[in-house]
Picture 1 (cartoon, rainbow, N blue to C red):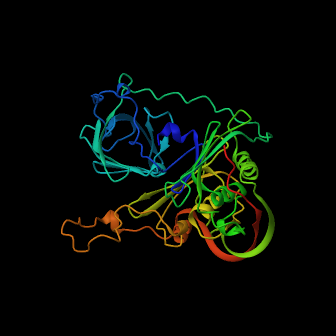
Picture 2: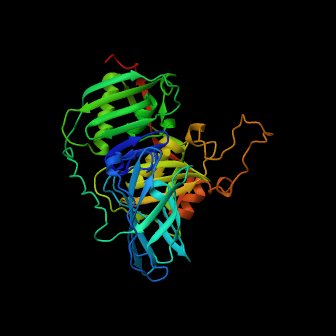
Picture 3: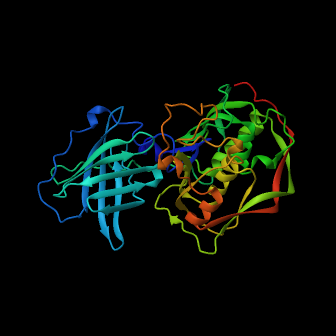
Amino acid sequence: MTIKQVARRLRFVGIFLLLGVMGVGGKSIAAQAAPASQAQAATPPASETHAKGDISGNWQGTLQTPQRALRIILQVTKTDKGWAAKMYSIDQGPQPFSATSITTDGATVKYAVDMIGGNYEGKLSPDGNSIVGTWTQGPNPLPLTFVRATKETAWEIPAPPPPLKLMPADADPSFDVATIKPNNSGATSMQGLTVNGRNFATRASSLQDLISFSYGIQAKQIVGGPDWLDKDRYDIAAVPDIDGAPNPEQVRSMIRKLLADRFKLTFHKEKRDMSAYVLTVAKSGQKLTPTERKGPLPGIGFRPMPGGLMLNMINGTMADLTGFLQIIVLDRPVVDRTELKDKFDLVVKFTPDETQFHGHPPKLPGAASSGGSSGSSGSAAPTPETTESFPDLFQAFQQQLGLKLDTEKTAVDVIAIDHVEKPSAN
């Protein structure tokens, strides 16, 4: 997924959930590149000499991917606490990514961008005008040399696109046209739910997925359905009957209407005591970062990486986070009791267990295959990156976010299905 796509798209998938303004997971920054004509030759290094260890200023370099070349800009500033940096992939869009950290140790320069699972390490030249190193985002590191930009050589950062036209907040949209087709791929979880502008689509979604998402409940809160409720999977393509990009509640409302119209879904609600996870702020206090993003839609996703999974949220509320956890990750409802009302950006790294992701946690990089031969002489020795694991989800939330997930039996809403049919023909 390119940075430009990231800023536009809403996606809900078995590997990540994106609700609009920002996306993470999926393809790396190097997975899709601009046409070759947009990539420029390497910038000649600046001629002046800089103070030892001074990396402040504008840097640029070309990342040569297997497909094409991408121009990368790194803006570094000095702060009271050290260094700060923003990175741009200008052939993929104008969106900056703030570095989670940037450090120097002698001539070694390192920075990380957790939101896209990337990191860089390089060596600063003696004159301070170039950094020769490697960009890593996934299993295959790529060489990347930065040189200082001057007024004459600096690449232009593209202008941001015009604001997306939003659907009126008081609008009550329905899908004007909707196509539902069986998906026989063998998928065991929903592979995508996207809103791109006005175009809505799902891939390998079950009726259970659609009910869970549109009513904001966990699968265990759906009772009385047929055995195909979570087995039959569908691809859906639809367009709203009102112009403009919908907000999250309008998306859920349109899906609810589709379920009633095409699946003939009727039900009644009950209250039942059920084991649930309760999200609260830890005694040490929350460690969340208020978002700087604009727009009505959040973005939530995760990416497998050495050591476990990295979960990201951009422009999201605690309700967005608990909704993602209960539908995708955890095996029971998640109740938000943080009393946090703002929108936040967050990154948390954890190791999943066998109870999560509906019993099918994503395969982690470096994980041994259960069917492999234990005596293969061609096996590579494990590296520190593949043997060092992140903490479990509950420890990670408390240590990295200042949030607690505790189990509690509590009253929750349950949808008891009275009637449902397989979807009507298109």
